[in-house]
Image (tube, rainbow, N blue to C red):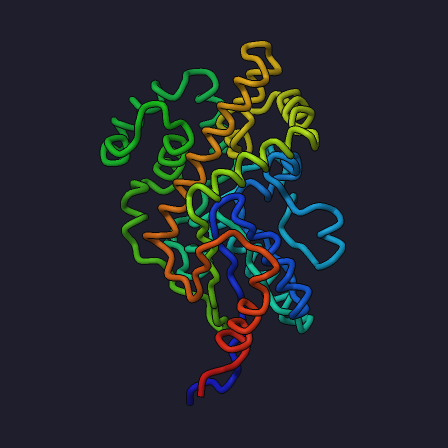
Amino acid sequence: MPSTKRPHPVLIVAGPTASGKSGLALAVAEEFDGVIINADSMQIYRELRVLTARPSAEDEARAPHRLYGVLSAREVGSAALWRTMALAEIAAAHAAGKLAIVCGGTGLYLKALTQGLSPMPEPPADLREAWRARLAAEGAAALHRELALLDPEMAARLKPGDSQRILRALEVFEATGRSLAEWQRIPAGGPPAGLRFATILLAPPRDILYAACDRRLAAMLESGALDEVRQLTALGLDPALPAMKAVGIAEFAAHLAGNRDLATALAAARQATRHYAKRQTTWFRHQLIADFTISAQFSETLNDEIFAFIRQKLLTLPE
């Protein structure tokens, strides 16, 4: 017999950086007694509060926030790890009688949650550390040459300087004996059982989005972004670690090292942020099927329309 158990609702709030996702998620959480679950691959690192525009302590006090700052910058986050943690937080929210609100701009994370992942096993930690040590000692180009011998298909896909993806391909090949490309061709496991998703996408016009990105960067500097970069670089972390790839780190680190003035660093960070927002926008346009697209930056004037959508689309089961 088919199950009569009601699927649990999950709201996804997606959009590029500076589109207002956090504000939208907070408004929904307060209206519907929700828990906000982070789906941003950089907000997951505790050392990056300012540079990733994580919700403030005041916002966190207004509604429960989960998976923000839960990993050290020394750790390697992944879609698989995040999905496991996110499903646990979604289950906990439902057990507490609250609406689960997944909020973020990392498309791969959202796709992993809603569509599942290929059954590729995660390489052991000691193997990953060994490859990272080799990267530090030999450089990305040398590892790319080795990848070309072991896994020509993946080597052909990757540029010699793409250290993070080269590492991933080498780790997977050594751990499994199979190409990462082969694993990626295996169909994903599908959506998780017992959940019903509805997605709101914020898609502001480019000029409005870029202006918001510029304002955010200026606010980050006022809120201590340089101190955050100084503290992070003092840890002496491997530049290939995901946390070290956050937008703004390389640009402001160059200023702190005396290699460029602050105005030049800010201009470079502004350009990098705009490129990142453009990549996100392109991904959402081609990869995400949203239930409700808002062609504007979030503002409270949209609340009535958004709340009505949530009540009708997500909280009311179809007959």
